[in-house]
Image 1: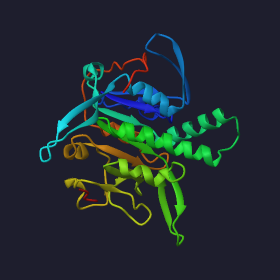
Image 2: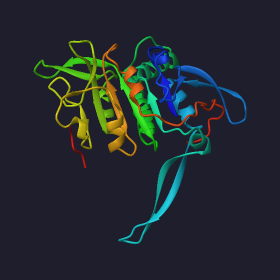
Image 3: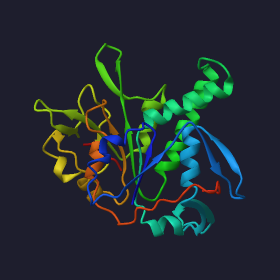
Image 4: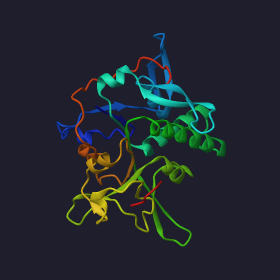
Length: 278
């Protein structure tokens, strides 16, 4: 099963065309929502990032593993995130956040509301960066496939050349890129066909794959298809960047088929939770 956190409210793009081999369950997330805590009380979840975190806490738990160093013999502990029984029963294998741009805007709106000011201050921008980094890192550490989509923010480099950044604010538009194994941009060719740009260009220097993908070796553009990525990565962490109308959301229909279960859990508890560029 695939869970799609719909921060952009864009699932209408694919609702009428969902491939029967792809079990996508949309989950609406808002910058302010009510959920149920572990005692059955209603609690306010303020911020799209916290809403997503709350939902993930229903399906994943933290596990501390003690291991012994084979060379020096000392013991140490490592914290990993594992799926709980509920997530395993659902057959959950992919999580999508559509989009990180929408989620970032939700964080910004919640910060402004909490501060009771109409504009973002330097302090609030710092909090924005911390919250966006934390939720991105948390989702990045999940032991399943993760796909973020992003809109494009157009800017110029130091000599005036155009650069297509992911549309998030401040330094996070480049800082967050370290969390992703694969970064792809969408495009539309002269015939109106949706394409993925899988090799970098001057305007799109962030495109990469940490592992070589055979189908991408001889071309700059390919038809949308997640299968070649999943064939190479055990659990892929993917960022798909593009303008509105260039196929970010519709590309999700090319995710390989998963289990037949379509029953997602309802939020009910706030319990815990070498690079080769293409």
